[in-house]
Length: 213
Image (cartoon, rainbow, N blue to C red):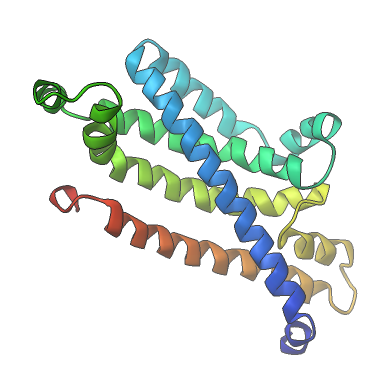
């Protein structure tokens, strides 16, 4: 296996970078979408049940089924992969963002308004910082789940390490079938651990000292 990696190390590194880039981009987009939706839900409380229901239903849709639904509309390749990964990435972040924003003490919000803050200032300087640890927990879950979804998206020629897994399955019984599958699988695991560590560090930097656990 070491010879296999050594012969293809540039290609493996490139595909690993592509995999990480796809996941990070999808999770970043999903975070923005989820937080905006969570703000809407907290402004219209009756939408909270709808948001939780949609999140639960969305997570039950098999990745392969969504990939199949996207192919006629967006074709094969990076665009469909990004949409697929982003769809699943939104769901856990949305749930946590709603819980986090709803958990902010209304008294603190009123105090901020009493100090002259309004609208976006209250959200950016009070509500979001207090809800951030809960939102970040959702982002971490989303990132780990997105790693697997991105690998499955290689079925429609999406970028990343998933292509090695499918190549190994297609060549089962062949000389390098196991090597392809192991490189793809282990590569995804390593990337997931590295990115999760980076998120932990981001949490330490961006979470106010007064609410750190």
